[in-house]
Structures are given as C-alpha cells and as structure tokens.
Amino acid sequence: MTTTSNSAPLTKKDFKSDQDIRWCPGCGDYGILNAVQSAFAKLGKNLHDTVVISGIGCSSRFPYYMDTYGFHTIHGRAPALATGVKTANPALDVWVVTGDGDSLSIGGNHFIHALRRNVGLKILLFNNRIYGLTKGQYSPTSETGKTTKSSPMGSVDYPMRPVNLALGAGATFVARSIDTYGSHLEEIITLAAGHEGTALVEIYQNCNIFNDGAFDSFRDKAVRADRTVNLEHGKPLLFGAENDKGLRFDVDMRPEVITIGENGVTIDDVIVWDESDESPARAMALASMSEETFPVPIGVFRNTVRPAFELAVNAQVNAAKEKRGEQDLQTLLDGPDTWKVG
Image (tube, helix red, strand yellow):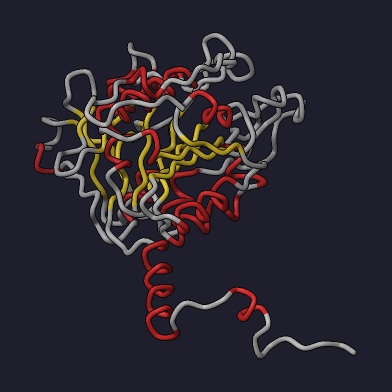
C-alpha cells in the first residue's frame, strides 16, 4: 500500500495499485474501476481506512487493483467476511465487490442476510448476466431461453432480479447504474458511500467475450434517452429524446407510460420520485417493469434510514462490559456450560 502524507489530498492515482490489470480488453470492469477510484478520491477517503472484499469471479479481482486494504475470499462468502470486518471495527469503510453468479448463486444467503441485517457495507454487484470467469455458462440473471455452454437448448430458468431481491430483503439503499455511464456511476457510488447501512449498487456490466451487447438495447447513446429513466429524488420520472414521456401508476399501482400533451396529460400526472418512501412497493413496481415495453430505471430506488447492525452489536458488547467488566477468554470458555468427561 502506498504511503501518502496526511496533509496532501489523495488523487485517483493514489488508489491505483501496482498490479497489472488482467481483465479482457474492452471489459466493462475497467469503467467501474475508474469510477470507483475517481469517487474515492473526490470523497477524500483514506487508503488505510478502506477495505475492499471480494468473492470469486472476474469482478473479484478488484481488490488487487485498489491500493487499499483488501481480501479476496471464497466463492459467495464476501458478505460474511465483510460483516466480520465491519463488526470488529465499525470505523473501517468496507466495500464488497461481487458478480451476479458469486452473490446470487452460491452466495445467495450471505447476500440476503447482509441486506436484511443492514450491515454498514457498500456492495457493488457487477451484473453481466453470464458466468465470465468459467467461460460462458448461464447465470442466475441470464434471460429465459439464453443459449450458453451449459444451456445449449436455452435456459429454462426465470432470471433473478437483484434490485427486487434487495428490496424484498429490506435493503435500506438500493441503486442501479451502467458501466459506460461514467459520471452517473460515479455519482451513485458517491451516494452509496454516504449511506450508513447496507448500500447495494447493481451495475450492468458488459462481458464483451461471452455476453457482448447484453444491454445495448438501452445503454447505447443513440437509444439511451428513450430506453432509460433516471430515478432522482424529488424529480418527475421523465424520459425520451424530447423529455416528453413519463411514468405514472394506474389505480392498481401498475406503472404506465404517458406522453405529455396527449389526452390531456400534463407533467402533474408524472410520478415525482421519492426514494425515502418507507414502503418499497413503488420501487418494487418500477424494478419489475419489463425491459421490452418500459424504460429501464437507473438511479436510486430506495434510500431509507435504519440502525446499522455493527453499531447495535458493539453497543451490546459495551453494555456487557459495563455490567460485568472485562472478561478472560479462557474463563469464559470454562464457564458453567462446560464439563469434563472422566
């Protein structure tokens, strides 16, 4: 790790390690790494206070490329290790980098419970809808009918939606961005960094080797305005090249696309987004929209406040110390619930 003067503000370069980056040329991971390093520098983070923890997969090489503390763990277990680090030292800034296979397949339960507990972790979930490191098998987020090496006749699975899963698990901060939307991604990472509980950022990431173009139908510059809608707190959900289309809910709270000026529709009919809504129902409705018939939401789905897990655990530890004093570990191990077999 580089040693820098406390008086000199860190730059993006300070967060770059001396390791050669070994992602495939053109991989979307490069854009994400650049956005994270830029955001960290602008936020004034300290190298010695920051920990990046990963599991297994292409995304999980991330800690090697950050000149911070890091931990490359085992498949799907990054949230568990990160929970331990954050609980042991709540002052540390702990980030989890994972992929759709790592977090949603073998690591599904760890992922869910980190969100449920509201541990003070920032989780960056790279979603390329494929297994890249193991060379192109379908993943939990691959679309139904996806032809891959492990599904030659097309996957019969229904895809998992990470944002929906996070909302259902009670996550307090849920957001989405895209690897090529550099400034947007950097902004979302910055917002996640300021959240006190678990912050999940799903990042649509292109795997140009095994699933190239998975998001071209809405991420390319030529179609972006018509095919994405930006979720910004306190602003109407408008989209389109002329910014004349919007979203509203019908009487059954199902989203529908409307056009300003048609059939008496005005901007007052458009949903004004409230990311702080205690109920996740509206966010869930938007996250459930079909990509084929609706714009793809990017931005912050939910941002609410709830006590963080590690603070509650440490409060209990401190309360026990005040009541019983410092205890000797061996004495605790030899407590009333142990016995000898003679």
